[in-house]
Length: 352
Image 1 (cartoon, rainbow, N blue to C red):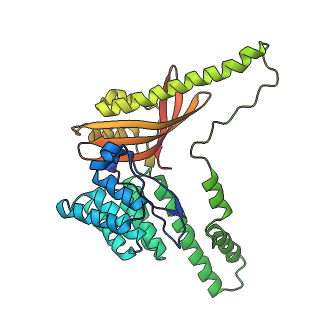
Image 2: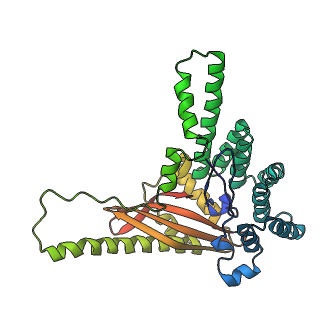
Image 3: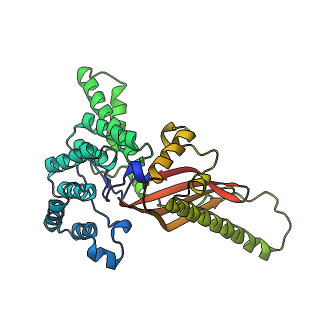
């Protein structure tokens, strides 16, 4: 039920995002599948010259020994490279070398404490060994590093549930007649069912990545108008607003890429609330400190899906961030509101 991070790392202090390529894994089995990052050689021409894409391709093909050899070869010349070290940790996990994987991710947290993904994967590995206190501590560090890291929040909930299960079991051992602990324990056991496919997990797995906008109920008395015009006007209006949201997202990415802070910060609504309860002024100062010093930034948006309902909209897309120091991809969601003729961001989150 835990989610592990599989793609190359985000750099939270610089890009302000995290990577999620999530598939569900139970506590009994950690399933790590490396996805080829669009920022790391999604095109054929780039892939041939991209060591990260080469390793990803080998892992996807099940050639784990060859992939591990590639990472070792690369790290022999660039031992500090965080992305390749992260990939090596993923491969070690996939090959069942949990102790070595833990050492790899632990070393990353020590050398790059600003990165949330190694903490998350450490937690998954600790949970697989039933070391839930260590898993909890690692996830709390991941969230402290990136408060909008949705995967870590969900994993922390799972860890708390397992800790609760242990506590309820201990209560029943000490007092077999305890009528309050037994139903709570059963509830948690159902959540973490033996086959790993509880009703809750099935519902989550079946949920579409981009749910359609909820259709509003028609009015009791519709205004008189020709049927043909009624059938075409709504889709046309919706299409116009979808185009407007698409343009707003593209302009936001363009402002970020050009480091135009007035345009970038102006893409956020006055009601925007930064993650983790950070004050708006502090958030803006933090974004300036992360963006302005970069020599080069490029933010690309692909697979954009827009859902509009009235004056609210949701934009889901794959974000590719590159700078002078980092190439990274992630899934991004922007919740937006229409203000006058503009669509502004009221909430942003990363992850699946």
